Amino acid sequence: MYFAGELLDQSGALRRKWEDEVRKTIAKHPDQKPERAWTTVSGLPIERLYAPEDNEGVDFARDIGYPGQFPFTRGIQPTGYRGRCWTLRMFSGMGNAADTNRLWHMLLKEGNTGLSAAFDFPTLMGYDSDSPRARGECGRCGVAIDTLEDFLVLVEGLPLDRLTTAMTINPPATVLWAMYCAAAQIKGVPLSRLSGTLQNDMLKEFIAQKTLMCPPEPSLKLISDTVEFGARYVPKWNTVSISGYHIREAGSTAVQELAFTLRNGIEYVEDVVRRKGLPADQFAPRLSFFFTTHIDFFEEIAKLRAARRMWAKIMRKRFQARDPRSWWMRFHVQTAGSSLTAQQLYNNITRTAIEALAAVLGGTQSLHTSSLTEVLSLPSDFAVRVAMRTQQILAEETGVANTIDPLAGSYFVEALTSEMEEKAWEYIDRIDRMGGMVSAIEAGFPQAEIADAAFRFQRQIESGERVMVGVNKYAVDEETYVPPLEIDDAVETEQIAKLNAVRRRRNSKAVKRSLEDIRRACEKGQNVMPYCIEAVKNLATVQEICDVYREVYGEYRDPGIY
Image (cartoon, rainbow, N blue to C red; front, side, top):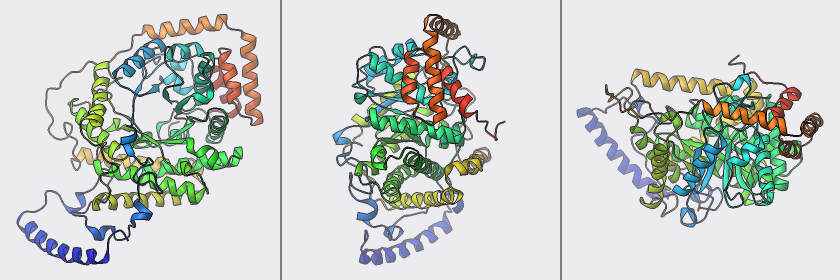
């Protein structure tokens, strides 16, 4: 066992003596808060003290182990950050493709080691910039992409065979990835040499973020298409990033984020195995995950450690994967946007630094630090640079990369890791009994759980039960003004003009033929990816391809919104 019996006996006697002293002290000097108020941000009760007996059931070899070894609680790499630092990947995109290309080159010059594309809302929803539904949104929350010509501008001057690019895109993921593949082929880069990640996680959209296009079943089919195509032709690409970040941003607890994210991952693996007939080992090593780190430092570290351990068990036991790389959970972390405040903006730098440290101590492979002004608008170059320097200070000045999983063996961290795992399994078992995540979503189960958690948290803030510095405590009358980044209205006018010019000079017959090919592939259940690549090369637009999906599969309307 992890703790020897003699040590437990000795610790028990010492603990009883300490508890006597505590009672005497409390009688004279009561605690600052009632017993029930000492909890994590997510509401898990926190004991006054943790000792060996709180980890009595923990076995070192079974539950903790060594880095690079099952169950990977301490990380998937045997050398940790000594072998390779986490990827510094700032989520970025704004205006048109040329604007974002300039930003990407700046980030690489400043020390970014990977890129992450933010797309504007029309692109995220599968609409072109001239759609009536897109008016006023072009380039506002990310880069506007309508055709392959935009995408070629976006990646101009970038070594696609030596760079990893993450694309935060969900309903139109097949289309944007087709553009990336087509751009690489035009540049003479084989698909086999491309590395990057598609978010491509529609289940969390139904649960939390709500950028919706088609119903759950055909959405799963399109995701499985990308997984199959990647396994066969783009083997270095992560074709789905199973995302807890948006679940947490919608108001979930840390346990809910952990449980719903892993259960979504189970759903994807089951769908690919069933629909495509691929064994798990053929595609599971390219699955990746995306979590947040919120402000509760130890809870977030425990969540990430529990996530690795649980996924290793899921892949080995539930799916009988034999390749150890199939057991790995590789994940990206973004510090919590929902923890930032519009009041006293510079406090957000401190919040982000603490959350980034939690991500690193939790063993992330890739990290985005939110900028101090993200609560107001797209961040300025200044705000992005501060956020990036936060990561660089962590990596190069603090010494946190010197040793692996330095909090392992902490009575508190190990107990909290086990508790997070136990409570997450309860959620997963409940969803299994409901018939899976699609059935749970259709019943509104995860949505209701998240809404209840968000309501409880907001009520705690409003009552003052939970402190948010600068909001409900230590507020000031005068605020530091930081001008938000503004996108010129001319971006939309110029983007629409460019789109219309492309439509006038492209081969309309080739576009029509390629869209019909996509339609037939959808109707026959074939993989759409080869047809999407051909369509974007013929300059079919994002909306033209997504309209085919909407026509064949139907449009989804969230019952909680409409």
